[in-house]
Length: 163
Image (cartoon, rainbow, N blue to C red; front, side, top):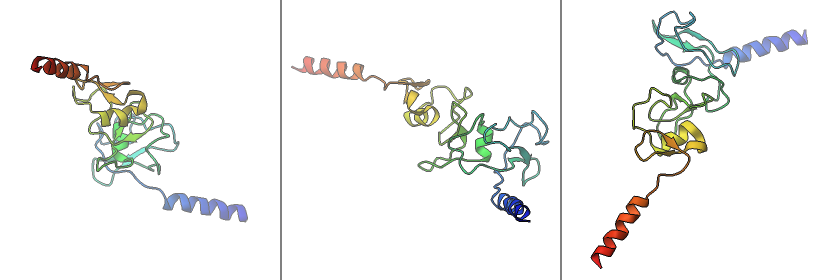
């Protein structure tokens, strides 16, 4: 009898604390049909797409309490449904480049990002400290900060000309 009570309590707690994700648009309206929505992360287990609250929309069935890290195989659409922690009023609706968490970036961290739009803050959010600086032409991210040697050289030359 005690085991039955524990199982019932566990089911009730799981039901009460289940948080459905926000509605998103997949490529098809049959949310549970393979290929219409991107694969859900394999970690944590038990995630699935289901019909959303609005007609033709899809949502994750049970958003994890923390989507900032610990995921395996997160997509931008998953992060849009199960948003991570907002940072400086930027919503965490994009998957990082390792697909392990939802991050607060100004645009996708993936290959479909508009060219030359990387900033230092987006590089840090998308890549962590390994590639945290935007390249000087904003075409991507780098491990080291862009060099200001040209600026310094120009200032020295200008000073020499003025003397």
